Length: 233
Ligand code: ATP
Image (tube, rainbow, N blue to C red; front, side, top):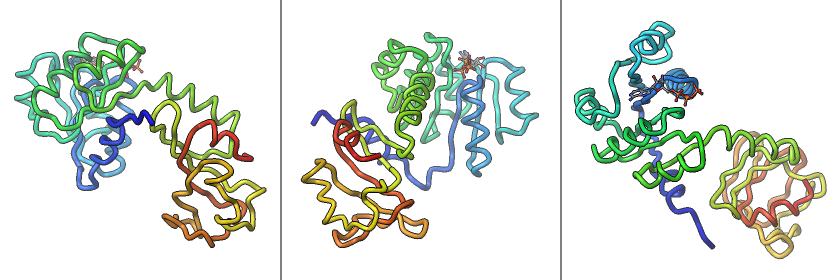
């Protein structure tokens, strides 16, 4: 199985005690990252080359701290303390050169986790080449997610392991109602493994084979997309 190990490493590295994030670039994407983190109670330092965007972010109170700097300058990043952050988000989608140089600077400055936003496939490749630990491509990902939601509304969430394999959270299909995991023979019939089942709003991880599934609750499976698509959802 051709697993995308960089993604797995990234998930593992998202430690719960990480409360500090630096966001570079205050476009629509960067601002939404800032305000969400800020509302969740995390410390966020935002930067932009444009002084107006910096003062707007401070006035709108979407971040605790914001600075004007040119992130293509390693010295400016160092001086602002960006290299001390555990996670830096490079939210510069429309300026490929600036985005690549900033990502390179953050990695060379020793930032352990650099997440970068791509705006095209080649941009995505370049970001990976210069060392981004995780690349997001929101327009592409949102399009895929929309198509999936429209065609498979029973799938609540998914994590792509690689192009062919995923971990998927789905609503227990009607056909599975009242059956135990053993009776379903998920592994024999579908080649899937059950990771968790919800019960009273909580997940039971590695459920016993005798666990009976209830209509309306959720289950989490891992396997091949082709097999996941064969589920009666
Ligand atoms: P959109 O807002 O269209 O969804 P986006 O969120 O990817 O796209 P961009 O248009 O790429 O945002 O803008 C990101 C921000 O990055 C802008 O506010 C821009 O001023 C800032 N920026 C560009 N170059 C630099 C740089 N060298 N240093 C710091 N910030 C920069």
